[in-house]
Image (cartoon, rainbow, N blue to C red; front, side):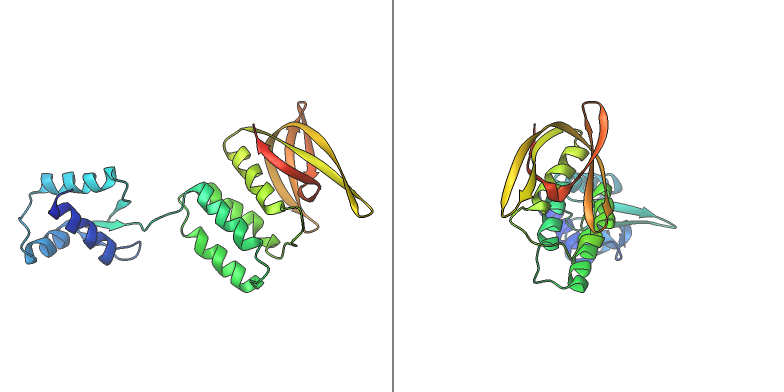
Length: 207
């Protein structure tokens, strides 16, 4: 990127966001006031496209004028779900703090489905910690569901102080819901729709 494009990037990073936007004329005026060579309309659009091609989220909003802004860095789906599970499993956070952080995460997601995951899962922000990492397993389930992939896992029963494990057949993740503060996973197994409690499943693995 040449100096003009780099300065354009700096303008977008420092002076724009979802709520603060600049018109083409305002951007060109900033460049001109700093001694940058004037660029014509075609060159302006080409430099904006160069930023977009390099992965920067330059967006427009049309009205009486066209406004330009850079949507700040967003998390991809896997990053977002990973952070969500880390927050939900942190017992040092109060419910209020957890809700605030999840709300902030929603504004950082590029994935609509990620936002839907949060809305459905917010009620479980007081999840219990256990030796079985339910949230890690849930993250694998979400990934399998979103990517339409099969997964396998084990089911366990607690007998006294011991756990008894059994392999579950290859499953297709369909959906999930909350019941009595427990997360229920909906899957297809042998062409039949079945439901499992997440807290009875372990060792999720996409195949």
